Amino acid sequence: MKIFIDTANLDEIREAAAMGILDGVTTNPSLVSKEGHKDFRSMLEKICAMVDGDISAEVVSTNCDDMLKEGRELAKIHKNIVVKVPLIKEGLKAVKVFSEENIRTNVTLCFSASQAVLAAKAGAYIISPFVGRLDDISQNGMELIGQIVQIYGNYNYQTQVLVASVRHPIHFVESCLLGAEITTMPFKVIEQLAKHPLTDIGLEKFLSDWDKLQKN
Ligand code: G3P
Image 1 (tube, rainbow, N blue to C red):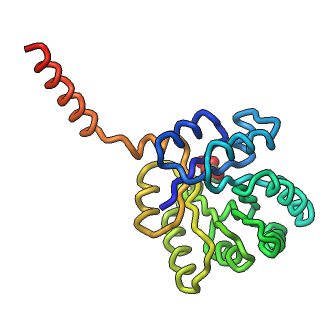
Image 2 (cartoon, rainbow, N blue to C red; image 1 turned 90 degrees about the vertical axis):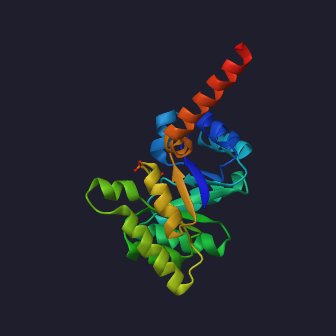
Image 3 (cartoon, rainbow, N blue to C red; image 1 turned 45 degrees about the vertical axis):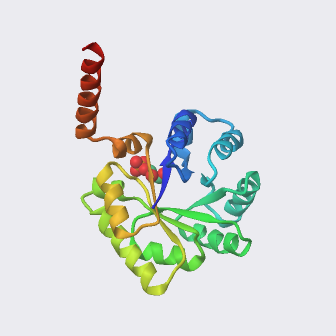
């Protein structure tokens, strides 16, 4: 299981990388806007310098030709850049061309198994189904992950399943059990993965017992 962080916050990326568990970074226009990175290129260069893994950078055009122009420029920034493309018809056309040009793509905003099949056939390197946003509308997001993993296995599609819109540790554990290749999470969820109340209680006891020994 590869762990990506879903943020454009450089401090969070630095902190997660220091934990030794980070395999990549996903960003999207909302996350970049939240952090106020007006210079997208410079933000990506900084992230690429911090993390040696796939770094997703999303295009903001909605027609194939403009997506291709944007994506080709993004791909030139660093060898680890993966061009993120929305799962719309124009996006699929762009994914096909990118794949012929050996530019890797992360196809985002996937909410159905049929969309995921099309992305794989177009040549996506990564598919990003959004589980939390499905849960938000009373559809089980993890069921979709199970379907995509099974379908990709049935046909031996090489596209990696990246579980996105992750809201809590159960999403992560279920992704591991289902065999998805990647989970991307906000920093808060990465921190939650490491937390256990018994670890905290146990550590407090060890340290207070050690203290007692020093005082006697
Ligand atoms: O980066 C895409 C995805 O992870 C967004 O998550 O929480 O905005 O649904 P969220």
